[in-house]
Length: 472
Image (cartoon, rainbow, N blue to C red; front, side):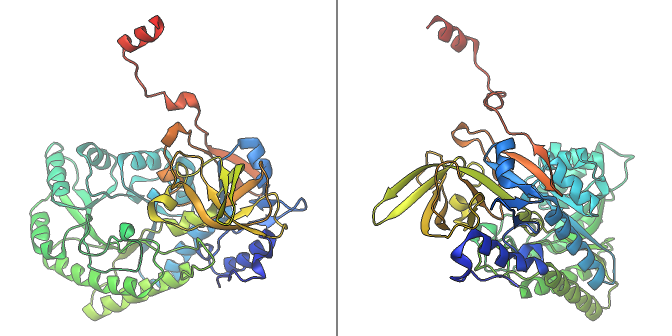
């Protein structure tokens, strides 16, 4: 059940928290705040048993606050749902592009998830976190030879996206004649569109990702002739932040038809990866299906499609990212300046913005906010929460309901675990924020706050410029 943002709910941040917390009874992706969120006796927001105000005092702001309980719960709900609804083997992969760092990869691994990576850097991070290569899947529409070599060397699965991938892998294999065949999956575009932002649709035919289905015969013919490649599976992904279930059921049916064709070429396809895409709550108007409902639809559709084709059940893979990490994190900011334009708008500026959360300016994404040190104060004004960057469009929330605030208040934006840190930048030469992992009253720094020295670490000043500066 997703809470509604009624007039009663809007009376205070505390009431808002209590109403949205009811959604946690279903799944983390249906709640705006982490599962452990509560208000303490000081009227402060607590997450993971830690006072958010004190966290900011200790670690500074902006600050990503990642709730370990919410993250682990989402992992467990995915894994247990597949075990409940799918009679065959299954493997949940965390789509780490949502947030890839050592701690997040390690937690996903501990919860039995594999890791979906899309670059050499993400692959390297997951390996350093201790994830077994057999549970790593490398994606990407333009993998470099270096990235593919790293993947082949470590022994992870490679999701082949295009002809260049195939050609490069064959060339790499030729340099390793005694090595075992390279395990691959083939990514195809299923031609299934969902009602989501244009930039995060990946399943329709007009996409940079994957082979066109009309190329299936050519692809399977080439692979069947290459003993250095072992085609273990097929992959498709229809988009992100999806609230519809039917497209995922349709995808299962399409992929089983591809599986039949692969078998006709004698390929050892035993895995089908249906991607991810389940949405989360960013505002009270969002109403995503639960993790359990999403998994059930996919499993039922796959079983039915295999029964119709009289095929044994393949190993069923999925790649949730946003719905695993998004609801588990909030971002805490400190309020700075205030500007009121009579009859038009009031701007509250915070000490971060588009460099730590580029989604509003990139996707026009909506968020909600609470004032962590005034959780019971009545919501008496509607303001714009503005970032500090030199861009007029650097607005985190255009219309935020907040209590009366003052400089130094702690503003907490919800559901910032997915594509915030991972897309963060140093625009305007702002250091990227720190991140803390909270659990049972303890906090642990998992990402150090960058310093000014970090910003120039990779800079190089030619000697002639250094001399002129000295002479000046």
